[in-house]
Each structure stands twice: as structure tokens, then as C-alpha cells.
Image (cartoon, rainbow, N blue to C red; front, top):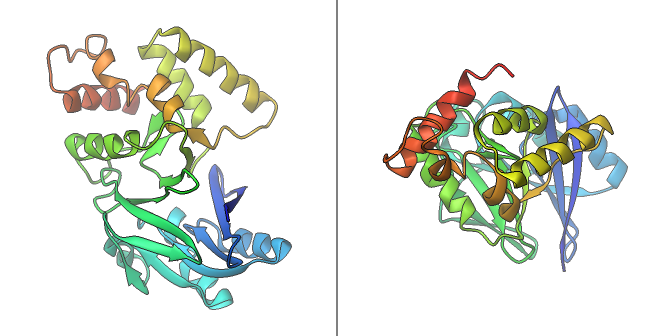
Length: 253
């Protein structure tokens, strides 16, 4: 039976995600950006929370762990770095898996934004929860990792099937689209940017996206094709990525 995803906005620009394994009726939340919002949504849905799946340690992703755990009894699962902020019931790393009823989440190493960042991939339903590694038309800042690490992480995600639905943790897409237009004049990028701006004008979310759409239009995944434009012609792919990331870091548009 399929996995049901319930997405809701919280904090300034985060998304919260509650997921339910329909075979067992058990639910999980992906990160805990806003404990109060998560508990309200759970109450509305009437779901039983079994797991908290953390992608990384930042407070807008793991800061609500203890309040949600205290209210629900859910087990907290995540990479070791989460213990910088709060306790874990189970530590996971790339190559592990986590079961929610009959739903199997593969844990994908996705460090770069933070060193121990992970993503959770439900291959059967072709769904990935990627935290702050990959965004619609963007990627996370390199607060702890290096460009080669982040590029490798993005390639692991890019290797997922094109139809994989990608749930990223923030609504950054309009700003990402403005940057994309500054470095990439591909018609597909222009068309997507227009669709993004129109969706945001209507108050609609731009998450989830898909792996195929990101490979076609995301300037960070397209970095090798943009190498000349960002001054990295002839450099290894990760250095082209680094140049695109550096350009985004100072972009004011």
C-alpha cells in the first residue's frame, strides 16, 4: 500500500512533512521545524506518530524533537550530528534503512550543507525527503562541507529515477529561479522560472519537485554545462559546481 504525504507550511519558509504508511497506519514526521504545528496537524489528521526522521542537526529541522517525542512517544532517528542539539533513539548513516510499517526508507548520505546530512528515499513510492541538500532550482549552502562533498551528494540524488518526487524543506524557489536566470539562458529554465513566479503569485507551493525536472533546469545540477559562464571552463565538475554555488552566495537579485 502507498505512502501518504501531508505537507504544510511552518515557520517563515519551512515545510513540515507528515507521512503515513497506509498498510500499518503508522506515521512519521520528516524533521521537526515547528513542534506546535506538527502536533496540530497530527491532531487534525488523527494519525499515530511512530517516528521522527531527522535529516540534519540544524534547529529548524531538529529543534522540535523533544516536544514532539514527549507528546507522541515517537522514536527519534537521524544522523549522529543531531546529538549536537538533541538526543537520538537510533543513529543512521548512508546505506542504512528505516522501516515505517511496510514502507522502507533507504538512508542516502547527502553531506555538504552539514557534514552528516542524510536523505530518506522510499523507492517503492518513488519519493525522497532531501532536507536542505537539494532544493527546487537550488541547493543548500555549504555551512560545513566542501564543494566536492556536496557535488557527490547531489549526484547520488540525481541518480534516483527521474520521476522521483522530491520534498525539500524550504520554499526558496522564486529566489532560486531569479538566480538561475542570471546564469542559465536555456529555454527550459526560462519556462520553469515563469511557471514558478506564477505559482507563487497564486500562493501555491513549488514543492514537491522531481529529479527529472531538477536535472533539466537546476543550475547546480547543470553546473558542468554552465562552466564557461561561471569561469570554470575545463575544470572538474565539482569545481564548476563550486563556482555556481559561489555565485549564488553573493547574488542580490
